[in-house]
Length: 154
Image: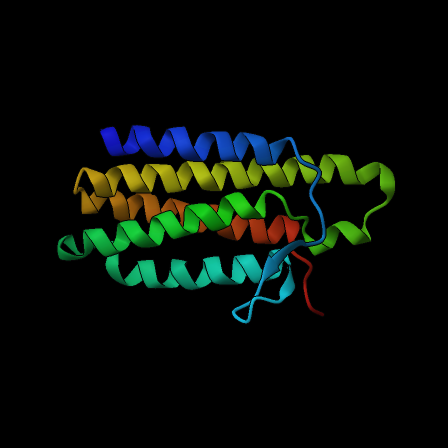
């Protein structure tokens, strides 16, 4: 229980702070060579997707709970970072549509973060059955978000 409270105290303020920011096209970060590089939502969510795929292989394994927790915590950090970024689809919208669209995006990301916290809780309780169910719900939230906020290639 202590770990969950600790992460809730750390992640919740970060999420709330990110929600108050205006999303941008990218944020400055540094690459492996120490050079400044633009970070886009596509880049961050690409990393998120890699962790999500790795988690699919470990979430049901009671012997891999520690590794699953590491993956979930990495996903939490990426999801929180994503709150500060705007989907590329934003550029296709009229000015009067953007605020509502971005609010919907933020709500979807908070839903994703909530699912990650549920998953973390299940893993901390060593309940791999519930963890797998949380993973399945999380996958649905992720898919719904892509359908609503991601540009489609024609």
